[in-house]
Image: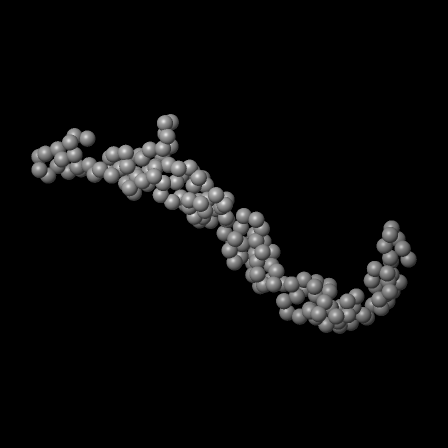
Length: 166
């Protein structure tokens, strides 16, 4: 009997066309991943679904789906469990990605390491910062010079101004 375009089966029958006896499985092979028992597929370990056609994954794919026991990550995510946030491709030209944050190589700045800043990296004695007139080193205490490469005298031990009063 068809009701609203679907077959309503008489007792003892099932399937889209009501042509499968209730004690048989719609797919007698259970997709090759199980056995038909009393009209229902009993799936082998690792498979699920009414026809045993869905693979169960032993992995937790946080930002992706499991296929053949491997996570297939959605765009922007990586790692064995799709749990590492990626960076835009331009980050990798002058930096590396650390869970969504682009870490720039010396001399490069900006969110994607695409801005050429202080080429000397401030000699590890300051921070390269963008000012109104461009990128400059902002030196840490005890250092000076355009590249923070001049050590300032912090303690006067010989009664002389060894850094020339600067």
